[in-house]
Image 1 (cartoon, one colour):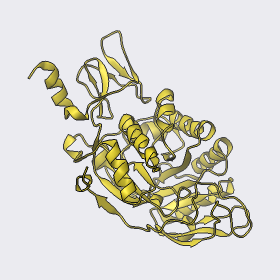
Image 2 (tube, one colour; image 1 turned 180 degrees about the vertical axis):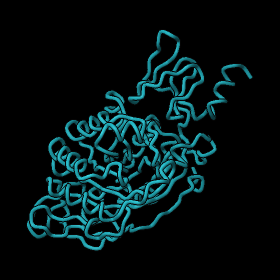
Image 3 (cartoon, one colour; image 1 turned 90 degrees about the vertical axis):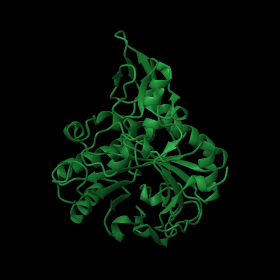
Length: 373
């Protein structure tokens, strides 16, 4: 085996390596990755913090193209997206690695994986799209770890999905630079963006990143794309759940993004490197929801707790319950086929296609190898 073959072998299966374009060479011989604000500067054979992008032959390559940590059909509300094709199933998958280092990561076994063996199920983009269509999924979600780090693969899957009228959903922290951001979101139909907190202190101390690039992504999505997006904030006791921070965050959302962007406040449970923090009390989530609505957010939700009121959608004009939810079960539907309140005719912001789906709370693991090529 020659030296180049050995380098490729060390990074992963040769068929999983894909050249990328967001990088440049430095004068000292290293290569800088320009995909995200980390700007990792790598020697030959080195991986970035995300683990899946590496310097091979003086170029940045993706080392997990066509590989996944597994496929599951979920309810779209689990992403969470409450205003995008409610009740429909979504085929969800991720890869390995992440470009943030969140101490509270809830998917750390996937996002922090350093084992290529994690990527057990391989499939070309066309097969993912075909299987999603065959299973009756209205969309495919790039999730579990952040799809921006495997954007070449996600984009190719999204292109294949468009050919068969299947939508694409990005579940992302929005930690990406300007040019890649434009390309990535050009192929997404919807997104849920983690706004992990509203202080630089939290981002630097708890995630190893910065707040401003995430805010830039949110403003870009709102003002320069047609991507439907919703925001999720995991509230961690003592870290990002103060009245002051929630006031500032929700006021910023209304002022910069408008009142129609849904916000989800979800419960933390001790995990990964934050086992010393208590779970989020349900009242904290309800308090966050009240603050958001007081500041003009029309659609504010609680998550990871049983709270029908906090998980249902209401008309911001007349107060009618438009979509009743009990966890992931739709219990009430008072929208017209074009997404208006049946009581007063006010438009509910979102993407609606007639009656809701009836997928419910089911979680269906899928092995793509069970579907013949």
